[in-house]
Image (cartoon, helix red, strand yellow):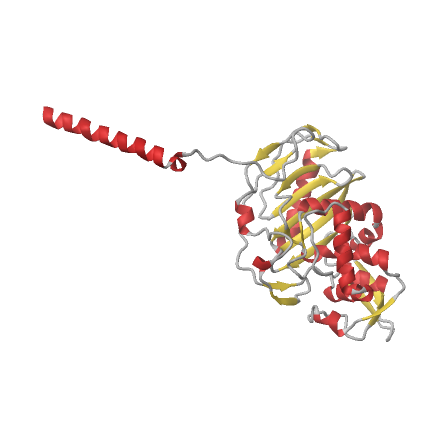
Length: 362
C-alpha cells in the first residue's frame, strides 16, 4: 500500500513538472484571448457609446459574376484582385461586427435625444448605419468603415458629375459601347437620342447602366471616372474608389461612413438628384422618333411623404445595397445598408428607421 501511495505521488509530481516546462516553452498556448472593439466606434469623448452583441452576418464567398439591377452581366470578376483597397467579404465580417449605439439621453452634436432603450434590430447585413445627416453623428453603426462594392449607389456620384459638367438640354445618342455595358437594357437602344435630363431619369429611377455609360461617354469616360475619384477625395471620402460610372465594376467601392459624406453633399448641393430619386415615375422622349416612354422608379420608398431620396444598388458581388434619406420632424436622417439580400434591403432599411423613430426624438 505504501509503495503504491508513493508511486502515485511520484506520478503526479512528474505531471506537474511537465506542465510547468510546457508553459515555459509554449507561452502562447496559455495566453488569455482578449476582444477588441469595432473599428467604426466613434470616440467616447464626443459621443458616449456602449457596444451591443454582434449582428448575425452571413458570410459572402465564392462570388464571381456581376449583374446590374436590370439583370445585366459584366462577366466574371476576380474579387481577390481588386486594387485600391480590400474587398470586405467574409474575412472582414469575421474580424468585426459589434454594433455601436448611442446611450439614452441627448446625443452630442445632434438635434436628437435617445428616449428609448430598445436594441437595434438583428439584421443580416455586411454594414449598416443610421445617422443625423446634418452633423454626421451616428445613432447606430455596424462595420461602418469596412469597404464594400457600391453597385448602383455609385450613380449618385455619377449624377453630381453630370450636373456639373453637362448641360441638361444637351442631346446624347446611345452608342454601341454604352449599350454593351448592359445588353439586357429594355428601353434604351443603340441610335436612340435623349437629353441629358432624360438620361438622368434613366440613371436614377430604373438605375440604367447604359444611361450611366452614355452620360460618362459624352464627357469622356476616362476623364469622367477621374473626376469621380477626384471629387470623392475632395469630399473626404478617403475609403472610396470608383472604377466605372455605373457600379457594375467591383472596384467601385466605399463604406457606410463615406456614404454619409456623399449624402451630405448631395443633400446640400444637388437637391435635384434627391427630387428625381423620390419621384415614382416620369416621361422621357426619344428625340429621333418623338416616342414618349414612361420611366419608373425601382425604389420602393419613392412617393412616400417622409422619403427625401436615395439610391438602390445590386450586383452579385455587392448583393443588395440601399442609401435612404428620411425626414423626421424636418430633420434629415440617413440610413445605409450594404451587403444584404436584394429583396431585404428595403425591409432592413424600414426596420432600422422604425427603430430610430421609436427610440429618438428631436
